[in-house]
Image (cartoon, rainbow, N blue to C red; front, side, top):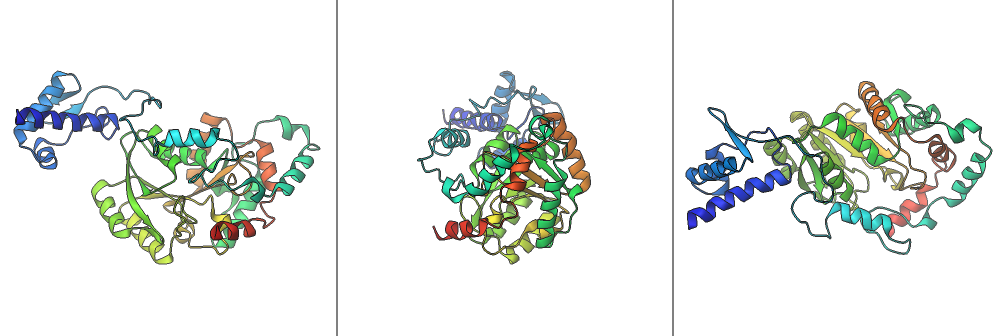
Length: 370
């Protein structure tokens, strides 16, 4: 009876890995001896569990090679993404509740500032000016890279931080989330491992689940990720990508220190790790903190940003900063999936509505002191 129970436990552990896509179709299962050690059972128990799963058609044996997952990856069903989750931490549920709730409802973790904190006067002025804009601005698609004017402004802002790039290293997108999605589409394959902070912005989890990747995490402290655990996680799981906020981390509010940033980049280089640095909240910092992209020079760090949290979520516009060859590839991918970048209207609102007005300083102080 005990043997049957242990066999069922091993079978259930495999099914969980399949349900969460930690094991992808066509992927080799752990060796019998290795999985026996992981589960704390005898090799014969694992053999019986694998044989039963093979009889069910879930896995199949390749003599001399091992056991492999059967089938082709199905399209992800977002309504049934895997095992039942606590509703309080299901990222899709949190996102829907946040988007559908009224303005009077608090939305912790979303990073949305109150409407009266936003530069409403500048936005209204920009909208009045747009009413007199040329017809093409109001009716045409956006260009593949996004308006040169806004890319030049962003390049100047990067240069002021010490990141010397030209407009050809910038791609404008409809949002910060779309920026991350493009990078994930380009770099990741189902079954890859991605590292995130614990806790992290909940939509990172939702987006990564859409890409059918395995998610691992490390605790985030007041000065950045726990570097001892970060190093151990890199060695054990060999993630392809790390996604983080280095400035005003969401949801902890922590900020990366120079020492942590330096050690993190050394570890990333040693383990061939690509980093997505989401700086959506950077404009709210009263004093700039260390930036991975600046220290790295966009060698293995990809900068992501948007203006949804600092200017207006109603005029969505994001961007990616990276090496020109990456930007060229992402541009083609954006044309294929979105037929261009942000609408010209949204980009123009960003240009006219306060990007260079310095209106974020007071809001940044209020955010840190609230």
